[in-house]
Image 1 (cartoon, rainbow, N blue to C red):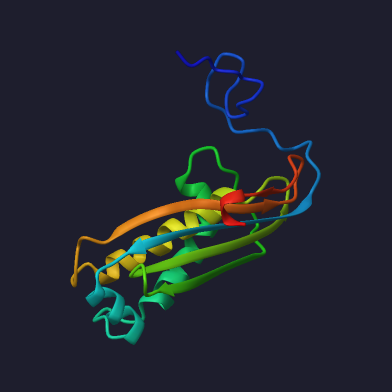
Image 2: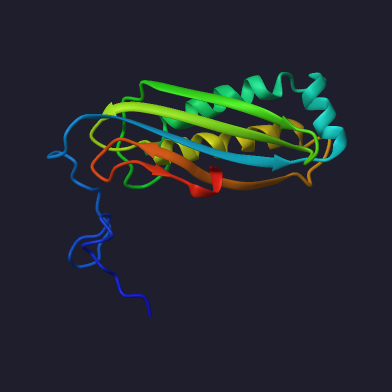
Length: 166
């Protein structure tokens, strides 16, 4: 049995009920988070994305916009997330020919009371889902994988760097 430790899990009150964390006493600081993930595709999908010949249009351009929109609306999708005044959201893509994959990397920044890890993770997830949506007519066997937090900076808990990324 897992024991709920309410002093460690900040999204629960003393009775174990889900709550939105009270950040009203936190200091406003600069915060940033980087997340990444991949979509594994077949050769035909990879070549269509790379050459810009997917029938639905500019796959990576549309995925970039979708990722930015997702970061801005994370609080509407993930319960208990705070709405944040995001100051920057950047989505980059790396074409990985050996893996026959596309890697998405989201960097999200805010000056606020709480961090932007969920926004970065949500951004990457939606960018990759958009690639799937735009390419599914070519092949539906694509696989979204390895979505994870690379780093986060700022805030009370300090900086975090995923050692697997270094």
